[in-house]
Length: 213
Image 1 (cartoon, helix red, strand yellow):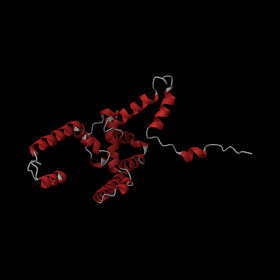
Image 2 (image 1 turned 180 degrees about the vertical axis):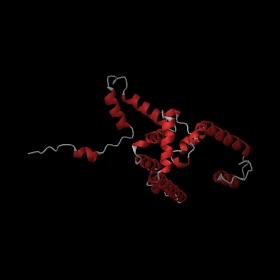
Image 3 (image 1 turned 60 degrees about the vertical axis):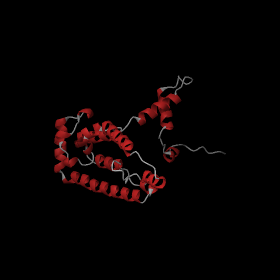
Image 4 (image 1 turned 90 degrees about the vertical axis):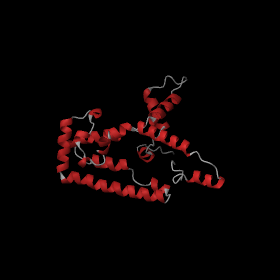
């Protein structure tokens, strides 16, 4: 943008070429810089906890001294011993090596689908979180502190959107004319209002059929 070539702003470049208009690149440069600084400030905490977040993907090459385990209520001594034991066991460490290769394959598939604009195929790719959870769930309970950290990191919300959405739904459901709604019923209504998807086949199997005569 600062060079005025507009290499990465094709629409703006096309508009300039077609209309011969004068583009104030300095204005756009300042706007982009402010946006970049805003994002950097907003996600500064992710950079600070980079090693902690990287643990869930590649725990075998993680330096325990750089991991922030305090927010998750994990015993530091037990965690270090469990992680050390995990690294020395080929059976368990091999699972993470295999999973890393699978994650790399998924990233290659994503890049290919995006380049070819195959958005439907992109949605069908297995979720990264599912692979990570699968590897962690396969570990025995003797690695409880390692699993606790992984689950704690995976449940961190990137924004308050989900919480704000839930509160908005709650206010619409439990309004002034339904103030006597119990917490149990409110919780059920919230599940139906948000992304809850009941297993209808399983529920129907548990119901006793009524035969008419």
